[in-house]
Amino acid sequence: MNQAVPEIHSEYSGIILFWPQFVEAILMGQKTQTRRWGSSRKFEIGQILEARNSETDKTFGLLEILKIYSQTLDDMSEEEARLDGFTTKADFMDCIQKIYPNAKEKDDFTVVEFRLLQKQSNQL
Image 1 (cartoon, rainbow, N blue to C red):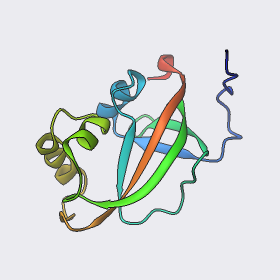
Image 2 (image 1 turned 180 degrees about the vertical axis):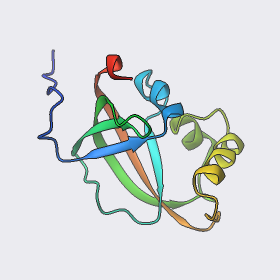
Image 3 (image 1 turned 30 degrees about the horizontal axis):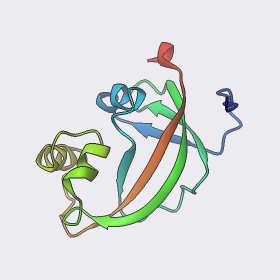
């Protein structure tokens, strides 16, 4: 069964930015969740977002939000680190400290699980 996929245009309900080093992992299906420091109310389940490279502001795909929940870094599992595009939780922790240098392991992060609906790889 073919599922219709919407085209990328400005009518979607929002934009989500990703560091350039995560774009390829998202396009390859290796990164299916992201963590944002603190409590984020700007995402909703079922929402379709334009995924953009944070350095170039170019859209590289469309994402559908599947699940949203709050979690501390302490409570994150090795499997969740892999879903976030990392080989190990230690690799994830190294990266997250560079992105959020003041974050602590007991701080709440908003976890956003998503699926890639459409690639726009020519916009990288």
